[in-house]
Image (tube, rainbow, N blue to C red):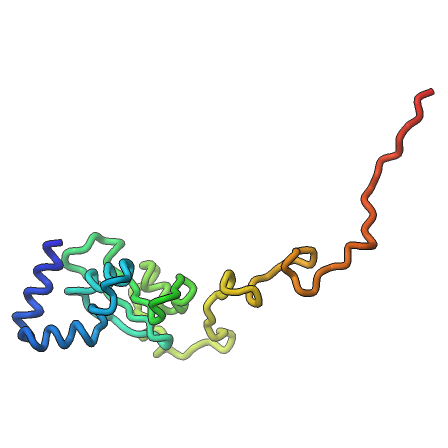
Length: 160
């Protein structure tokens, strides 16, 4: 909490009160008062360095000063209402999980391989038309016809 107060105080000293309030409005701090996750992310962003933005609009931050190692890199998703980890493209995933220190922007500057496929987020669980259902599943629109199905019945041995 002290880091938050220190960050706010430093922001007011650097920008002045009116510019600081304008900056907080533009960055969406006032909109996130009712969303606890977004508010926590916005508070966590105070004093952090914006490392980059991907093609989907996700913002990647790093704070090396007063944050525990392993928790000093994070993402603020572009879609505030619906977000999941599959919205992070692979070039940023490596940086986010400390696999590489090269940011996604650095990796994109290199010539991409011909076999790399464009990243798409995973939509499973996001609506009935996007969820896979097996052939026999009740929610499958092309449901299998089970009328031909005859259950196996063991032969009964007669007692002699």
